[in-house]
Image (cartoon, rainbow, N blue to C red; front, side):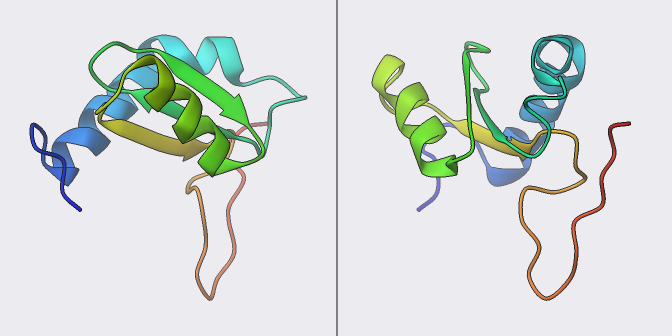
Length: 90
């Protein structure tokens, strides 16, 4: 279901910008590598957990109707279908 205020491309662009500008420094730790971060692209609020559904629900609880960007911390993608994830953090 599309978001009413943002296109999918906008959510990705804004989410990546927020991740690189502020969130990455806070979440990219040894204990979080491989977990999912969900980011509200309007407020910058985020949640981290191994369960992507849980992170999305945590952000939605604070901001109903939020446009949420999800990313696997330390990897190039959140999920892989028929392939492998590539670790991007050292």
